[in-house]
Amino acid sequence: MRYLASLIFALVLCLTAFCQTATPAPTVIRAGVLIDGKSDQPRRDQVIVIRGNRVESVSDAATAKIPAGAKIIDLSHATVLPGLIDCHTHIFLQGEDPAQGGYDANILKYPLALRAARATVAARRALEQGFTTLRDVETEGAGYGDIGIKMAIEGGYIPGPRLFVVTRAISTTGGYNLDGYAPELDMPKGAQMVDGPVEARKAAREQLDHGADWIKVYMTHRSWLGKDGELVSQPTLTVEELKAIVDEAHGWGKKVACHAYNGIGLQRALDGGCDSIEHGLQITDAQIAQMVKQGTWYCPTLAVYYHDWDAADTPNGKRDRKRASDHGESFQKALKAGVKIVFGTDMGGILWTEPIAQEFPRMTELSMSPMETIKSATSRAAEMLDMTGEIGVVAPGAYADIVAVPGDPLRDIHVLEHVTFVMKDGGVFKNAN
Ligand SMILES: [Zn+2]
Image (cartoon, rainbow, N blue to C red; front, side, top):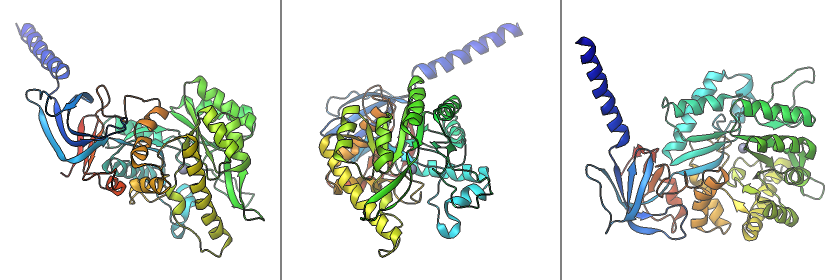
């Protein structure tokens, strides 16, 4: 008898659980204006039906069927967009202040637990600003910490965006911080150092084995002004070293992001088959043509190069100004030539207390249209991340990553700095409407 009772009890429990997963209570968002991330034009008065963590339907309010028992979220006075995507962040950096020891203190003085704790704050900051996905491009000496933070977010222990992580990143001897210590000291480095194609391939294998979603490679390191005032960057990996990494990553179905400022290192990045060029401060016409031909992505990260300039009359100050002006020209040439541009900021290089969306006006100032900048942070970024239709769009079948801003970003791009509503995976994280 007792056995039978517990069996029935278990069956009822089972059925209830089944019912809950089979038909989750739907959520309905009423959108005053919808910019869906993919279409060229916004649409007025839309109804978005969400079931579980996915968008079920998007339709005109006049004809929409509101499912019975739906929870209604009224964003009829707002502009609704897909969750935004930042393709270049560092949650393990905190805009290091030189007065507080700068970059080096992170590695030399801070326990990994402190760095991880601060990374959780960075992840939360991104999410509350409407960035529901980040491609986080290396931990700067915090090893595989990004994998741990990603697990904590996916496990629901902490709030944060979807993360695509690269783990340790790769450079060569003399090609990354920590720099400038006595040669007798065996200093830790902010990236994994390799020399030769064999070591390069091994590092890629290790990082992929431990869960890297992308591989990040530093193709240039130091930069300065040459004797004619031109920007010069120190190249790091050879084409052969990079090819070994790209070949390995592509075999795993993964891509390679290459930090490259200009010159020899940028050329090697393209010849070695990089999937995305990060920063690309000075890109020649021939290199732009090569990017178009190879389908190379460009993640410019403009805003960060307007931060922390040294005084105008110093060598570093002159270099800082030259970087920004060359960068603007390269961006405009790339835009004109049809290079695929994605939104990226280098947050972490910028304090996490600053608005991530400051990159949008930097792009529009260089003549990218507001709608194109939004696509660079939604559907186009999703395409680079091999997530087309899943993220970066408000359409049936996509994850319910949805944000809202008060006003029209196509008229005033700055409203993207004032996200009032954030939903990730169908769960409301922020609703200040
Ligand atoms: Zn970076």
